[in-house]
Structures are given as structure tokens and as C-alpha cells.
Image 1 (tube, helix red, strand yellow):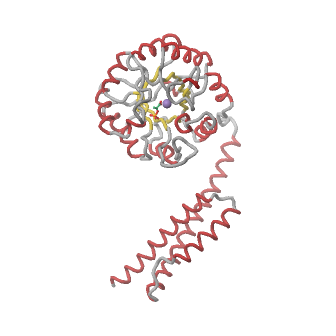
Image 2: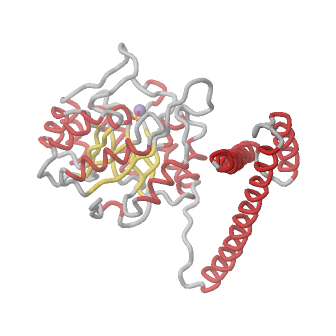
Image 3: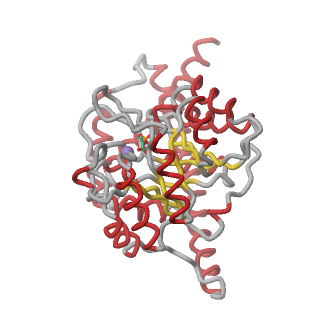
Length: 359
Ligand code: PEP
Ligand code: MN
């Protein structure tokens, strides 16, 4: 992907804030003016067309909201961002000189819609933020960037807003941090901001998720705010007042290494070397384990024993979980780790059996 820098990211992590939805001119302007006064907000957001999961909820004020956003821009001097989901939205957003367009989670899932937006933006020097798709599919997210990039859009950024899951969860959308981490690994030049509002679905966990994102070296936050959150027409449980937003930001720890301090680089180097040699040992041990598994495979083959022995497998899980717990390893990690090691072990045994069978 050919990316170019976006000005607002020049000075470290940004804050995008504003209401979930533009409701009235008064609500948008008063919220935005308070946000601008805090001096902590870099971009004002508001949804003009709202993709709602179920019909019957508030679906946005439509084009009239663009006039309000234009006033916001004039009064606050801050860039404005809105969500676009089709050609018509893009056409109107450009007509009203919206600075940043974002593609919502329900649109990123749909390659037809993303392509329509990309085509509408051909030849335009636009800045586009792409939220992750609703489902935890990194390729779909990447695909959206590629469609925009192929249309010539190079000012791109990602918004991590979490992923839907079925059943009970403490999150509205599960963060699944490994997905944005992998996106960062694959596209180090692509800025990525976190949207704790749609991850949490409530006000209580915003702080924790925001801090987590900063600690993962994210390039900013998108947090919904409203002059009177309890009366918001959409997503009222997760919106906060501009003054609460300031408290939240003030309580965040922005971690900056001291570039003057040689100790900082030296110490991290030696800790990293320690990790590297432990990783080497782990790999060696895993390889040894698989060699033993192959011997077991040959033995089982010779004695007519099946590869999977459920009792033995249950035994391993039980014992390892118990010991792992005392070593400070989480159950969820140990389970994933064990299952993966076990599967690899089965594959090695399988290879041995097949090889011997085909002889
Ligand atoms: C929003 O930002 O208000 C929104 C609709 O978000 P998402 O696309 O992440 O659900
Ligand atoms: Mn919202």
C-alpha cells in the first residue's frame, strides 16, 4: 500500500471526539464548542447518517447535519469527520468540505459498498478512516484499505472499534487486540486509533480501554461525547460529557521514553536479549517434544494404538492448568497453548503413521 502522512498525526496521539449522532444544530455546536475549549481535541466527529442494527431507531438527520458541521468547523477551527456509507454520502460530504470521512463497521464488511465509496473518491485528495468490520476478519479490513488505495487514496487510517460476538460479554464489541496488532505489524505506516466507546458500550470501561490502546502504541482515540449524554438519541450509555472527556484524558498515561537517557535503550536491549534467548530455548524444547511425539507415533503404530488417547489428553490439560496457575499463567493462554501444542503433536504422529503405512 502506498500511504502518505496525515497532518493531524504529526504530534503524537490524537483525540477525535463528538456526538455519536448529530441531533440538532444546538446540540452539535454546543458540544463541539466545549470540546474545542478543552484544547485536548484534534478532530470533531458526528454521525449524520446512522447505520442502525435494527430499524426504528434514530437513523440520523441527513444532509442538514452537514450545514451544522460546517458551522462547527468555522467556529472551532477544528477539522470535522463524518461517516459515509455510499456514493451519495461521499458526494455530499465533499460538497460540504468535510475534512475526514470514516467508513463504519457495517460498511467495511461489504466490498460492494467500499468499492462504491472508493470509486466516488477517485481523484480526490481525501483523508479516510476505516473502522474494522463487525466480524473479526482482518483480511476484510485490509481489503477495504486496498480498495481505497487502488482508487488513489493514500491518506488512510484505521479505527479499531471491536468485534461483535454472540452471547454474553462484558464488552459491546470484543476488542480482540491481536487483530489491530497484526494490522500494525503488516502496515507499520498506517495510523491506527482506538474507539473505546463502541468497544465498551458503557462509560465505565472507557478509561481502561483508552489506556490499553495507548500502551499498545495506538495513534489516537475516538471517543463519543455529548452535551447531555443521558438524553442522546443514539448510543447514550457510552457517551460522556466534554468535561468528563477532559478528566479521562488527564488520567491517561502517555508513555514517552527519554531519548537523552542512554540507560533506557541499554536496559530494554538487555531485557529483549533475555526474551530472545528464552524464545530460542522454547523453540528447541518444542522441537524436542515433537521428536518424542514421533517416537510415540511409531510405538502406537507398532502396537495398534490410536493417536488420540482422550484420558491422557485430559490428564495433561488438568495437570498443566493447575501448575500453570501457580506460575502466574492465565487459563485462557494455557488452554490455547496446550491445544496448539497437542495438535502439532498429533500432526507429527500422523506423519509417522502415514509414512510407515505407505511403505
Ligand atoms: C459510530 O461511530 O457512531 C458508529 C456507528 O460506529 P461503528 O461503525 O463502529 O458501529
Ligand atoms: Mn455511536
